[in-house]
Each structure stands twice: as structure tokens, then as C-alpha cells.
Length: 153
Image (tube, rainbow, N blue to C red; front, side):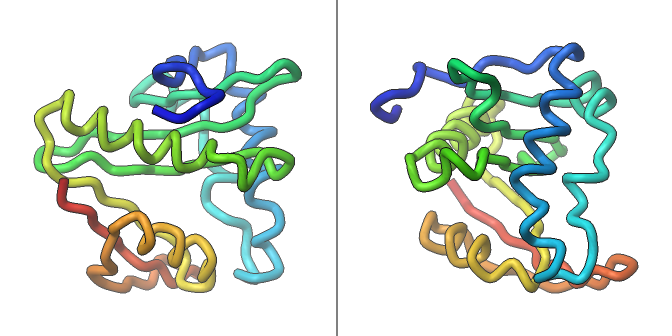
């Protein structure tokens, strides 16, 4: 996978929910002024997400470095969120998690990854495009305008 990272992330446990929430807040709080709203990952019930779906983590010496939440759908694997601690951004953790999402989709026999992000998160949208995702549509969800993205594996 990537130098400096394990072969694969670790599966999160229910006990990780509080630390996952803190990671989401550190990762996404900078987008509040950009979106003029609280990003969805900061509001997610992480106990339920860990219990009901797949959440994977990268652990560092002082806590969580990153997380990847995946939801299996009938014909694709949905990336619910990728969070990387701001102190570790730019070091390959996000790419490592995204590459693992591709591996996990293949392990599950799914040929498509999907995600959605806020239209105002231009930096994130560009990052996903560089990774091969294409924008497939827009949708208004409450006070948020989201962009759907897809990667065919």
C-alpha cells in the first residue's frame, strides 16, 4: 500500500466512537465557514455507523490519524466519509484510505465506489477527481448542496 502505513487499516470498534467523533470535528470544522453549515460527518452517530457498517482507522502514537467509513450498497460501495487529522494531512493517509476503499470494494465483489460531498468543498472535489472520480449529479439536501461522485473500478 503506502510507505509508513500498515498493510490495511484496522477495523474500528464501538469503543472508538468518541475518538472518531473528535477526529471528524478536527477534520471538518474548517469547512463550517466555507459551507455556512456544519458538515454532515460532524453530526454522524458514530456508534451506529461503527455498529452497522464498516469503519476503518489508522492509529498513530497519540491517537487516530484517519478514518474511512464505508456503507455497502447492492451495486456499489459508498464512501460515507474519509477523515484525516489536519496535523497529518498531506502525508498520504487520505490516499492510503482511498486506496483501501478500492481494495475493499473488490473484496466485496463490487465494481463501483460512490461518494457525495458538499459542492463548496472544492478542494475535496478536486482531490477525488485526481483520484479518478467523476461528478455524476447534484442534489439539494436541506441546507446543503451536494455533489455525487463515482469511480468505476
